[in-house]
Length: 85
Ligand SMILES: [Zn+2]
Image 1: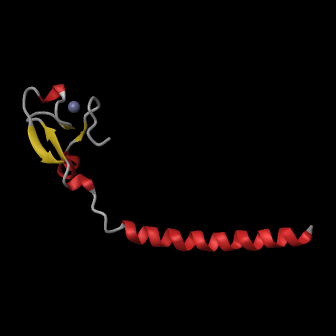
Image 2 (image 1 turned 45 degrees about the vertical axis):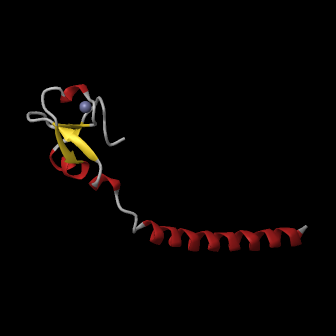
């Protein structure tokens, strides 16, 4: 019964090495993907400190389109429409 256990240990060690190399390759390949936040549009109001997704009822008074990345710098997400999710 000792031989099969030895084989199993070798196989597991081989898998561990393979997974490590794979994860390194994945992280490198993921980096070039651009964050969608810079292109996604959200809306702010003249007086509010929240940003909203299109169609939110809080946009009835004023509606100013800005990039999500810009809105995050000075505004917090609306608790009703939460455009970041
Ligand atoms: Zn909203």
